[in-house]
Length: 376
Length: 132
Figure (cartoon, rainbow over the protein chains, first blue to last red):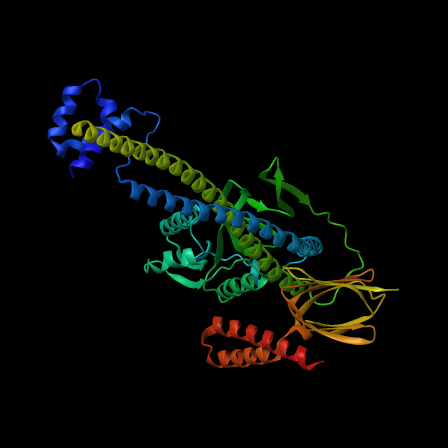
């Protein structure tokens, strides 16, 4: 006990050298000792963190655990970076389809302009009930990604309540599922799981659900809430009106502004000077004219009927892909800042550890010297 | 003249090569397409696509969509397409049985719509295997 008091006294000695009377008093009263660590911290003003009080062994353990955590976050960052690439590839693979689809839809629409079309998916009814498709991620550790979207959903729900419109939720992704499961007062139509890589099958499941809800007139409007991928550091939660489809093949936001035209944006992950960056190029799909002698095998309405579900599917798939890309990007930046923080914490901890170790050694030497002196 | 077939799904390009002849199930029945066919646009039902390649017939299950034919180019846009040889017969048969059971249990307009769609998809997949 006396020995440990001595080491503590020695370690705090340099800061008290100007007031030696004080140090003597504190030696007599060991219960005040912890307060002497505060001056040690104040002598190092560059460190804003609270002083670390713990023994050498605890410090070593803490350094080890921070090291481990840092390794994990570093690995997660790299994995997320690799998967952003994969998500990007999925978008590229889907492009021939969406390009042809937009082209065909555009052309057919041109030809149908004069006719009075009445397709069930384009029918605009007075809105009594709205279905919200909320696309969240499956996993956490990605900053505020899931929270942002859920907040957006809550805001929309409040807005709908204010308007006196009923609503129901279709939740996609585990994070959203747990959120809505904990809040039984929010009516949820269906819980769906997301996956590592969105495929047409998952989009189909959502589309089927939305389709039957809309066609059976249970809901009059379907809105899709997802996170739009802007860049690796920026993504926006957005609301798209999914149904009724506007026959022009556009996706409109809540206020009726067109947010998606025939323009197709492609994001590309590249390495520039050793850093990951994102390039986005806008590709305008050329719309070659249909041959004017093109015959319709069926009624144009029936063809439109076959095309619109396809369009609905590709819209949902695209939203899923964008949401995944945003999630991965969010995770990447969250993990990279976590790695940075861990590095700094490790540095600070080892500084404290080394100081304490040095203080202990000095104390031991003093003890030995004092003992030797006493024997003479 | 050669005939080019391109089958696209949202995920990938399923087929992109020359063919001799195809038989396509459209909403108004099956049609056969040979080289130099008149340009048409048609809705494609949930059904089977048969492709003639080197005097061999290949079947493919299509999950509904759209086809455009013109200039000896056939473009088929579908939600999902599976080659008959890639489908697991046991799994397909099971899915069909489940779908049938679901339809008999279905209540209300919405469930019936869903069950009917699922049943037709399952039936097509089984047909695609048995065709070979």
